[in-house]
Length: 265
Length: 277
Image 1 (cartoon, rainbow over the protein chains, first blue to last red):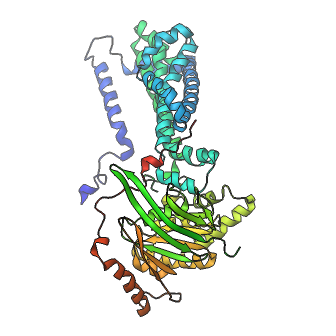
Image 2: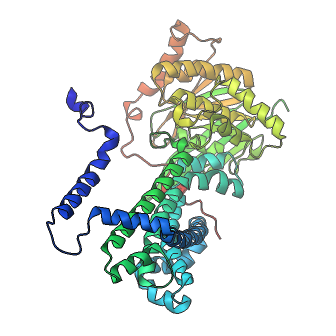
Image 3: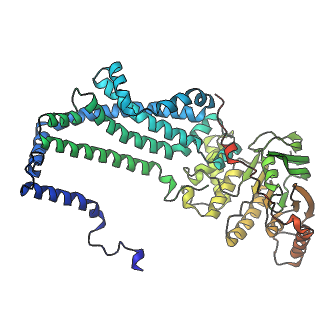
């Protein structure tokens, strides 16, 4: 019956399996640089990137760039999520609101996020305001859509139960609709967190001014410092990973009432 | 006040609009239920027995005839009428005690009184020790007991039960029938049970209302004059069962499934709850 438990005898322990590919790539990279498989200046040795990393950390460059990026990220995320929640809830609750705003919203959401950049830069300039506006927009749409979807798909069984229990409007919203929609709402916020971080980098590339981890990478490219560019990519990846990990943990905790199975009524 | 809770159903008819015309679900149902009575309603699928309950609880409207509680026409739902559905319909994000407390959200009680009432009803359904559990941690029978406690905590005059044990295994079902009987005696309220289990109907009911389908009508009301606790294997019990079953076997057509399944409660329609503004 061992085919049912393929986990039982495996050469690599489970927790380490995710590390196999990155370590292999790292080894390959190291070998390629060490044995000069390519003479291209694009191939920088591993230890040079390491030195750059140490230098970036020691000089505080990394922290100030990261701080600038993360601050914008969080402000934009907060604005986008609050706006998205308000909008999504109004959308889900009110028929009038959906009829009036719905068509416009569904048209606007079809516009690629990056298409907003020229307009935003005209309105807000090239500074922080435009970047924050851009990434709040990135966070806004997934929250609206998921909140709306969550509210619209509250199980009819529970709606009837609430009717029998004579909920008033406030109880209807806070005891039934929002908790029932919370898995979907949290999924929207989770998406917003990821989108906002992607948009943070996008904004730094497209509205080049000021400080940020994206700007660090642009500098690296302009000065042909491949080590700096690679270091930037790694940092961006780790930040994204950390944000995602945090959000997933928080979500699991808040939705512990679901148990392991999908909720049944 | 001793007569509070008299349910009077007079010439009740209900139909749903379908593609070509109206589909009659209930036709000229007349039934009087006195306070403290336990009435079982049996019938094959499509005989409108669930619709009857939904009309009494106030989830369905637009009917002809009268549904009167103490002489007053029933409009909408009310905490005076509780219901337990086939599914437990507990709020999965709330613990057992918080689910039961939902029944008291709008009750005119102090927080202390509410806590006490919740504790009493947890004890009534025998779930001490599970106060902090979430619905997904409960078995089907336990969840159904929580649903009964939630429906009873607001002290309704009538408890409606829509095939409450239909999804449970036979042993749990037999046990919960016994429990329900004990609760009925302890609370002294009117209970109306819809079921398609004839034995369950006789075991619990003071009378058994036999319904027939297409359109849903009352075929016969069989009184059950047996002392409690009732013994399913007793001759007298078997005789009542024979009487009830004979009503079904009269014409085999009434036993058959209806040709098309009518979705009485359209989920999409229930979802149209939205605020107007």
